[in-house]
Length: 238
Ligand code: BV8
Ligand code: ZN
Image (cartoon, rainbow, N blue to C red; front, side):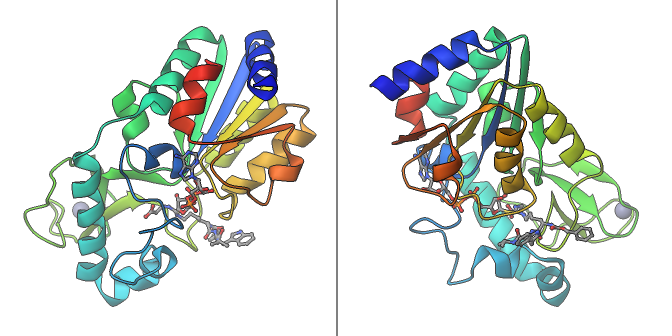
């Protein structure tokens, strides 16, 4: 309780707050995480499917995976953790939500200022003409889907070995610099450059608060690590 109380005070006293989320914030909604139980699809590791090489080798297989995830996400709703962050955004003059999630649940909860480091599973991009557009059909009628120009379309997400969208990390670092409190929610902090924001925030002087059901490589660096489900802890903090 002391920790919850302490973090509540830090948040209440902060003009600026920044938040980094991972798959764990969507776990209580029923979205499978990457590394947790069930984090596998048909015995494929995410790193094996979420790569440009895998798509070049077998676009249909990769699309079957994204189609499965889109159908799983379309069936669920944002949970109290997503909703608490919407309230925090309303409360704070300076607020940025930085997410590694492509599931769109922050959008559906009502969050506004979202930096989607790794893209959006509900947008498609053409390999030929580079066009990208929203497509919320689940399931997709035809795999792989195609662009109006006839080109093959891919999910508009960032795959391993691909750079993040231009300027995205700069914007995220800027958001962390202007925060007195940095909430790190439901991420195993294994994927870079996203995980690098955690030590970056510490060095920028923000109070780093980790919320996770488990320890992570940055638990010792955090000013406070709250152990438990985000859907139960966040409503107590905000
Ligand atoms: C790049 C989109 C360069 C696709 C994703 C430095 C060191 C080492 C490696 C690298 C490095 N720099 C770059 C690399 C390589 C690589 C990388 O990081 N590899 C890792 C595996 C070691 N990074 C890249 O390739 C990046 N690109 O570096 O480009 C470049 C530059 C110029 C030119 C060319 C190239 C791109 C990385 C992005 C990959 N795309 N997603 C898709 O989603 O399909 S990553 C994907 O996996 C997610 O977006 C997320 O980032 C990651 C999964 O992590 P989490 O979200 O944290 O989920 P996880 O399941 O692991 O953990 C869940 C956590 O929640 C757990 O801690 C659990 O305890 C907790 N939890 C569970 N339930 C709850 C909970 N917590 C609270 N409440 C609960 N209820
Ligand atoms: Zn096209």
